[in-house]
Figure 1 (cartoon, rainbow, N blue to C red):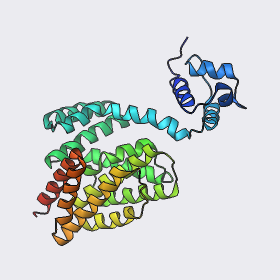
Figure 2: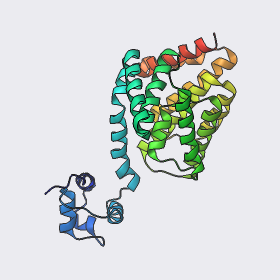
Figure 3: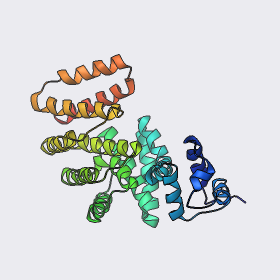
Length: 291
């Protein structure tokens, strides 16, 4: 009988086969071939200690094995919010916000708190108007304050949520939390592209929100982000970093040559969606600073 709670056995098998590793080699010194085969079929369970050991036998880091499952669950939970945002559907965002706010009032779970906050964040990004209650903002600030107080340990979920609520935070807390996330990134080497992409996206979202709130803090944060090494396989993140720099230079010098040069390059490369996002961001900044 297949156990409903064993979702990791079949996933392990896919990775093992992908790496061309036999059952015997994967199970070596940890369990026997038949037990591993049953677990891979979802018909049995293994302790997490054994699972972690098995992962090293197939050359997979535990974080790589777990984060895909966590990531898919998180994105699935906010899929309706993302669709409404992409469609510029302000009314739908308001409906989602109200539904989740009521659910949060009923049971106070973290999931509903952040779904409410994310809907409010996207609505504010589209309209420039806030609909997030002060008490909810205070809860979010308390949440991330606890993250950094807890030995500044950021799990994948924390970074995911931080990425999506930067518009709601005041400049002081946004800047402070971003510095702590940077500190975490520098101290902890995580060999996972998915994790690194998420972290960079979170930092650039924070940077853009700071540009709209406090240019001085935005400049300071960018200087610290700028020293991070971004590899050649992080093309989109590298382009976003250049755009943030161009925005800051525009606000300092009132010179938009670099920004329009980027738009032309994105046109040439066929990166139409990115160009559209950057154009929207540029217009937001222009409106805020009356440029």
